[in-house]
Image 1 (cartoon, rainbow, N blue to C red):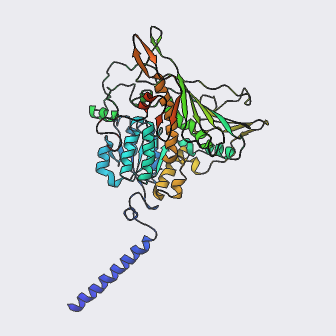
Image 2: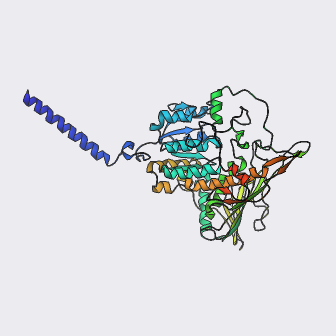
Length: 491
């Protein structure tokens, strides 16, 4: 008995030694995620992804991050599963939620990274909650609903050491990199003026908010609607809010500037190395809804706007810059240097940008598409850089680059190579929202007697470091959000 027991012990020890040795050897090649610690995933592992707001643009955000099964989609959150049914059907194994807070409570330890594609007003509260749990975040443009939120998310990504990316996919396009290459070669010289324009809005703007109260869609409950409202002041459901037309109402959206600014201002911001602006001024299209008198509609964005934002010289561009934004279908005229029959911006000229340099003009469309140069010596140049393999992926690999960086970890080469991490997209978003601050200040009125006196028709001076308008304090009410209980940053 004794000798048999000894033999069994020896065999058991031998098997244990082999097993441990094999595991140790394997450890040189495959390191489980729990060993690497919070925020780090072994390259051999798949990310566990969660998508929040997965109807509309959110459906492609989570699908492109999933990358045909390269990663796992373990959780989905939406308040209208009728609108988001295609995503639900695509990922039947993912657990479904209508409240992101419950999702984080129940599955926080199982989730590595999150895509956030809700209406603008909930970007920051959701992204902050995810980052505080150590989750990497991909957030649709505009990054936030207010300037203060953009600053807070930028700082939080560094504090919690998470990999971040904003969903302005044109930042990863070969068109944008071509523009940078041309400018860095000095082809157009210093730039003093940038024109940016869009045909948006393509949703209702400049109209009074309706007073009727339609029933909720059959796919939503009252609880779902409360969650859709989130941190904003409560408003009853109306199809002018959900699922798409929320963009034209200040409580939830950021208008034409918020929708397209992060796509169209991005090339100029990137090419010229811009930082915080110093001043902003605007005018807006008037609304006439009764007695042919201009009407103030505090809830809604105007039908059109013209905004001028000024920047100091930067390390890349040795000239102060005036950026001129226009929306509502208003665009600049052809410069003399561009032939009359050539489009400006993108084909059709409905959206685009022009950088006016001392040696020539650089033009581009949405996502940096159709880059061209017109030089004063008569030279015309179009895109010459071939698209790389990653840029042939959906949306130029914008989501794929983010998931790749998530696996490599905060501070990795892959992370530093991202084209719209919050270190970049935070200040870009602040510039976009600076235009909206001017627009909302322009519309700001106080009732005096039987009429209205506009208080905001003036140039606003901006202290970027302190996030403050220095010459019109009432405009600062638009810098920061007020949230309903249970939501907000850190809720």
